[in-house]
Image 1 (spheres, one colour):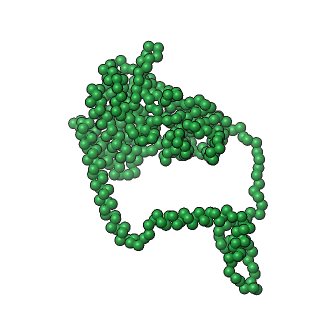
Image 2: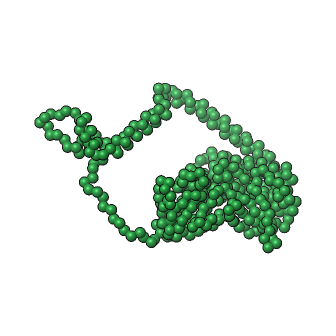
Image 3: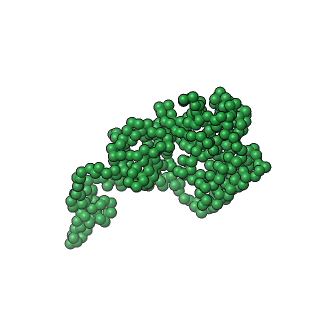
Length: 378
């Protein structure tokens, strides 16, 4: 844990964490600043009012605590993270840097917005025991994992018990994770081999799902096109294709034919009433696009919505410049707040670049910009 003031800054060069330098660890600091270390967040030392500060460039990375709030980690992710920590500790030793300088707080472990690569920060002079830091991290992860899957939970607790062992080393943990991964892979392969003969026996002549899906999509497209035909032309087509009836029988009306075919809805007798009211001055929680890119209005209906182009967001914005997890909007009582989630190309409020981990209250007619996509807040 860093017992110093930690601040965040966002400027045109990127997003940064600023931490005052420590009083010890001069040798580790020289090695850290002399050349980049693989797997570490880039860092520079700057001075302000004769006070040194480390500037860590975290542009395009999500901290671990933010990722865990968005999605519960599973055993695969936990194993990957602990394995990366073991590799990073070995990398520090190769560079003659004390392993305990590696920060294992969830706030200072980062995952790339684009590649899911895990990177770390180091802080010379922090001290402490490596295994204690690793144990605290595992205890944090145990509170975040989903305990519904019993096998998943068993794997994670087994790893936690290994870390608690006083005789265990970083190399032992790494070897155990490799064994766990191999055992899991063998189980999955055995399950696949057992299921394949049963599926083949139960459904020998079943057509491929891909062909059925193509035919179904083709049928849906044709029906959708027919629904767009004008009602009069559609009814006329139905009358031409109707079967001949007894001359004495009563000729069905157009509406009857439509109902029997069950292909189009009844034509409304009148047009819906449109009420034109004055625009309310009250904030409604709506993002209205400010370009002609064919984007729809965004309605903020939950107390917290995450915005980006990735799969694990609440509102998706399809644009190359938008990060997978870009920003979020929260609602507290009748107020709305905007927060940038350390996006690569930034979030702007009325052309002001927002800082990471700061909440900004939204007002009516504010202009919000996610990278280069603009919306007006209503």
